[in-house]
Length: 202
Image (cartoon, rainbow, N blue to C red; front, side):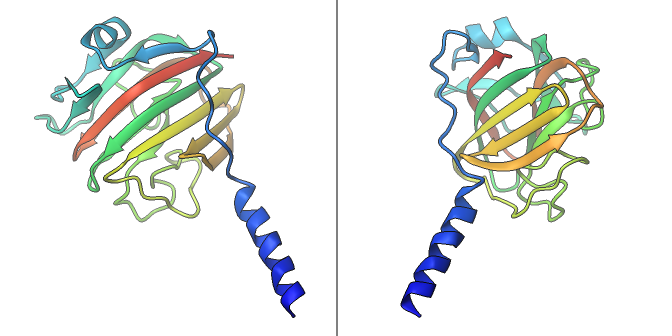
């Protein structure tokens, strides 16, 4: 019986670990830093869409208020087709935010004209939870990111998108809807912070 229990434990551990791996190491010279905690990098690499109160605070770009009903964004000035992206983020428990990719309309990003890796702990629907690709790929189980620093590692290559949150895969999606476009950081509600945003074209 003891041997059987040990064998089952080994199998269970292997199954849990199959979707986990060490984080991507952004040490190659091929990586480009889109935000390094300075106003200079923010101005150089991003356009503001909407009226959120984006500002630099302790090495992060922060937003916690807006007047308009619509979400606000930081939209990358360059477009990307096939790439790896690393974004560190902190979100309040009630935050609605996300990482948008291949945005077809950078002047008005939406979760239907971009791929969105969501940051939304309060949504009970797995299609909209933190770690999901909104409308396209649900997340099971649903992780919680509120109140702590987290790392998104996203690979977009051809028609395949893989999303890793804190070293655990949440999405492996095949979809041909969007081919290329800018990256966008969303502010919808609550409080969000982003830092150490890096991209590598593939």
